[in-house]
Image (cartoon, rainbow, N blue to C red; front, side):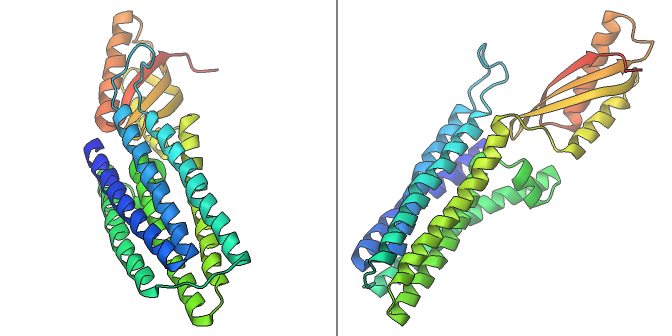
Length: 305
């Protein structure tokens, strides 16, 4: 999954860099604030791809004494920085330039160039978006979950960020086209500035959603309740276990989960060797049924009376 994710991020980065240059040139020549806002958006996205590639590389570092459960959460940290980048570079510039254009409107020139860049940008952003969506759909099918649920709960942060960025980029291009068209048709140049502000607000929404999700993972998020129930049931049906007293889970990465289970053992489990054998059995069967569970700790605890 990491190799495919890296390819998705690289494609998005190359597309965004080329598009950013084209938008910037077209924005300067046409005087369109909406196009310049889109250029800032693409620059922010390009920088974010660097963050995401860093996340994928650093998260593959093996566990060590300082980080015994590995570096999987690096993905969420760098994805959070990407969300901040969208907010500061993309949204901040778009809104500031949009307000300036509304207060001091200027006519939009070189319409043919502006529309040409918008169309080309839409094609390249669409290609990047399709690759991200296809990866998400394939991974969701492998997990046996709907695509939207996979996107919300289990998606690789880098691919999720690319999908959100590209979705915002496609919508932003349409907003820019509407703003430029209205300015040209009505002769009221403030429509172009209003489009820039709208793009900035769109980016704030995307940055908020991505930031919220990654913050949730960084502070420690459990598995969905229905998945925990399935793990609990799998353990409870093991011979030698009377009841599962408590089950705690923690997402270390999209494909790495830590599970701690307190269980009440029946009277047959009276020796250390029997408990050790039971723990190995539970570990093996849970890992077999739930491959993302990489660490499982069993704690024999009497049920509360």
